[in-house]
Image (cartoon, rainbow, N blue to C red; front, side):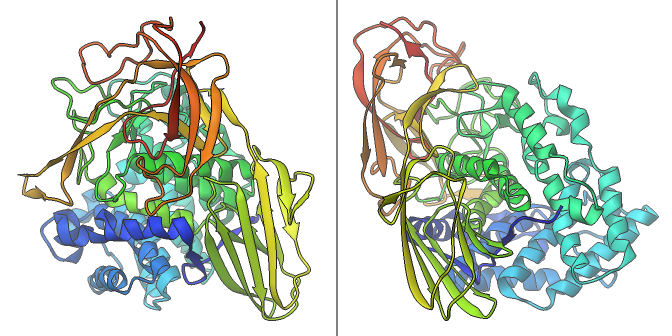
Length: 614
């Protein structure tokens, strides 16, 4: 199968509007400053320091590099370049690049080899640094030789993430016809985990930690065919589709992600979903869409990106949760036993490093990689794949073309495309239309809906295309069996009044100090409601996007709905954790018209609720 679409580089595509503001928040927040404030990046073994020398610096670079180059942020570019320079200069004569001694290599989990190779390819796409092709060639050739001789092993994380070596191998295969490249690809496939054989372990969640049910492994795994099939010369079987549907059936949430506080958590609005799993799910969905052209993956990507991602990171992007919950009435440490399957009592608070630090370093890839998914290359032009304000500039068969999209989507369903060309061009602009769109209009005329609209015949100069559609606000079933409100790509929640408390301290030599401190968020408003079963949705208001796109204080769109008070109650043993399901769905009073906001805006929220009959 030939890849349907290809990515533009950060030199060609640039964010605009609310998307640029979101990236600027990330650059001025934790992601853009980790190398200044967090020991595992600031003092990492990757740059000769005493701290972690495995996945955290590569994770950080995977987001910080495209972020820096998308924004053309010279300071951040200089800082990520410093890390890459040190890593390249530290590469051993035989090609080994990870920070460990020769004697430690046999027990070094080579997931880091796969990860840093992928990151260096991304860096090359952004920077054009001509040192990278040779460095990646030497890394992977040495890795092949060491695996073949038994001097290195594919085990644990590397075994479960074997497909992450393919961005580097595909990069090399475009430049070299060496036999060892395909041999290494086959070795990774043959010795890596076969996820289809694990399906029976995902039906019922277990109160224990396993690699087989680890949520990040599973979300990464979905893209395995999209990454590896061409080099392996295999037919596309749809493994991602098959396993996503299966996982979602038993572990899904309305935000399009899976429950997993480290490991799968079943169907529950109060079992957490790890932030690493959100950004890895987004990457998998983008890669599968680009490879297959199957629009369902772009629509799923929107659902996760516009809901689950902003929901678990603070407005200023200086703090994050390790796990988010659909129904989340409080974010203060739980007393006594943690309610999570494998996480501690603080995994849901917002902070520098709640629970493990993997999410601290990995969360940065979410928004930059999403921005790179806005426009994708076609053989005959370009497709507007995920509608966000952005622009792309490229040459098509001798014509210098710039396509600009101005929109407040997903908050408002109107779009202005401007196509500027240096001469007449046969380039085609394709626009993906979501399945929920109705009453589609182009330049003021209603047209019949299609999954992809195609525009061509562009003359020299500027062409403007105005496009709009409508969508319904609906009550739909959540995987839990309760209900939620959705409008297009956006999920809506009842916000709970939030009181944020700064918590500063030092633990294990890691300082939490404002703005990179922890926060405890206490809820101060009613939350025990169900949806009134009659005339539930009463109004929708589009308010415009503020300086912080997903701010609960200024939500860009709101829905008014009738909610009815019920006896919900707390989970057994807790007074700040709502029960998984309400004690009763009997009305405890008259229904009220209340305001719902986008799920990503409300850090304290009720999302999944029952229908209540009078």
